[in-house]
Length: 119
Image (cartoon, rainbow, N blue to C red; front, side):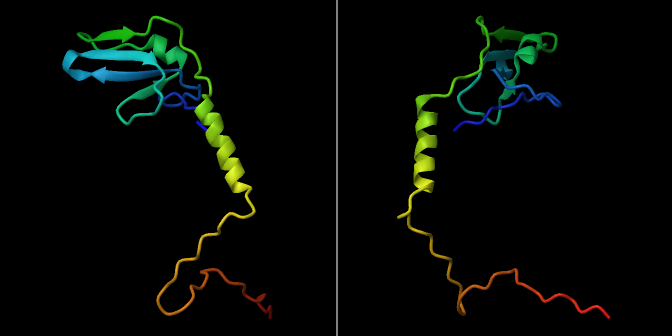
């Protein structure tokens, strides 16, 4: 299931409702509805920052005309969550084999030690 994405602005904890992308060749910043997936070269913004965005002199801003709204969970998200829960609860689910290592079974890196003797 999709988690709530937060505003990319430093210190802002508000949920993101818009996505900011740049068209450098056109000196344009584009603020539109929240993208389906977070992209590495775009920024998620809350409503306040999406509406207050300013750009350098000589640049222009293209903004979405409508209101920014929180994305609703899709049927795909709910179906994926239900299937994950169902799979985790299966009794007949095959357990993964521990990785084999040369020289015998793998030993755990943690072990129980006796209590130290105090003198």
